[in-house]
Image (cartoon, rainbow, N blue to C red; front, side, top):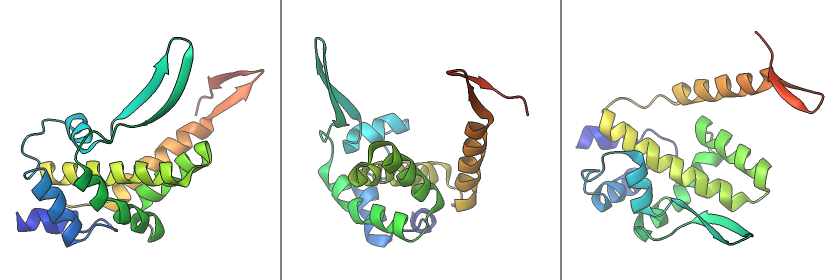
Length: 157
């Protein structure tokens, strides 16, 4: 257990207290078969408020474990502030789309939870450049799509 916690602590923003709280609140991620179950347990799943023709806003459900959301609040700020590549890119993308900083930080909280779960289950070392390379590939793919006459089409490489 100690080695798994040390591997998760290599993520910028997450420290021993945060990781130990995550592990204790989820019972060592034992009851979860996939990420969706964990996200729902923590209350980060997205719900939409709509009725009839009225479409309301989407928000997180908050029906899950509040201690997990509380313990991930400040690590999300630190992950963005101190240069965790995948977290900074996610925050920037959400902030540019919504112009609401807190939505970006909540997305980073969810990302930290998912990263912790993945590292715990796979028992692999955390490599920040692995996630940063995936982000760069996605951004380069997005640049290949060029709008022409109101439609988008893929430009061959």
